[in-house]
Image 1 (cartoon, rainbow, N blue to C red):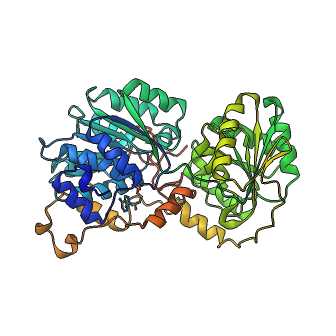
Image 2 (image 1 turned 30 degrees about the vertical axis):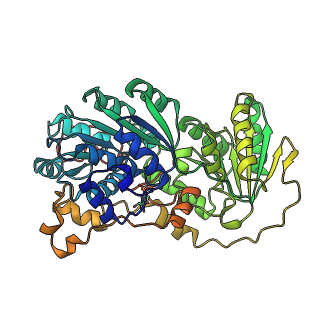
Image 3 (image 1 turned 180 degrees about the vertical axis):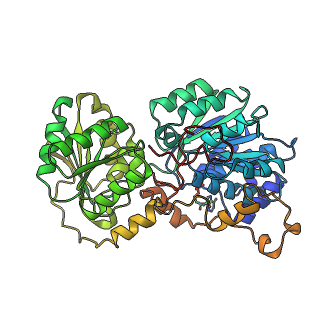
Length: 488
Ligand code: AMP
């Protein structure tokens, strides 16, 4: 399939060509025709599958040639993602005459305002900073035709739902909506039910396969017995253990309980400040913290390659989350273990996970309540692959310490005068340096396959994206970066 066959208009096709994209990824092939037909879309799954173009191209296609003004809004959780999405969109939009701007905390409102005054068709924004702009009438949402909520579960986890509610109330009800999320917590289900029309659900990326070097154990445990059982398990092990729970509250409580029980434990979740998450993560990498309790979203930033055991203290909501959780162990061909403590209410999701494993991980060893249900032969111990310097790896991966106030590299350069904000000018009017379009890295299919099936490790995908923007604590001072990083 080619992009031409998706029916995109000529200026947008030229932008796609400039980006170096030859053929649509599966999510693009699915989403673009649906979006062009005006349908609302809910895309469920992990990042890295080409979803920026999946929503960005139909948005630009819809707006090109129309009356100028803010008509396309993309809400994202972090500044970093904001810059990255805008950068991609500007490449696609460079022959369309459409202006793509950004709004994120940490730089003066006035800088963004000046860029907006030069023209605005699509705004990529973090919710807190967008509310600042609305408060100061720098932008209005009266003419929004298309809304995208990107990484919706991360926005939820970072406490943005009230802000999103306020933003939604400022735009026309008659509009097209798209939402992308790795998981589908009930708050997001509700948001979709309340604010979307009839929508089409699509799978972002493949439901990946868990490594076959992982042994999956499921143990029926009464909810009231889980803590005692977990303690017993942790005391019996010498290596690192990652323990998953579903909520931030539970995560905090369990981490504290384990500490009180004298275990080298800590917790990591979205309510902790960026600094304290960094400290916890470093402790885990260096072995000071051996038992780390985490939520699904926070765990996306954990790029530690030699976790011996993953415990599902609470079963995840979706099979996809199970695959991602257990993907933290058994990396690079090493042998890993996953143990799920399954309460009575969690038997449904256990069944779904077992069905999925039966289909996709046929050689993996699976035990349910001590009974081997698959892969009964004792496995040869896989050679333990020495991890690259884990501290360096993690430091490169979480991006937290080096959180730039402003985007680095290309993004930063552009932000100095052009980005927030660069007008999408026709190629002929650009200098030779500019005419070489800033290409989002073109990936080969093989690279993408790796991205789809492995745990995310880039700062963008991690739970610790730079410049995490939290709900603006006290807004009112333009330029004060009221919606800057949340520090609790
Ligand atoms: P995304 O999920 O939008 O962040 O995209 C992940 C990566 O895949 C980015 O580096 C994109 O530039 C790249 N990409 C997205 N769509 C395509 C495509 N159709 N052909 C080649 N690379 C792509």
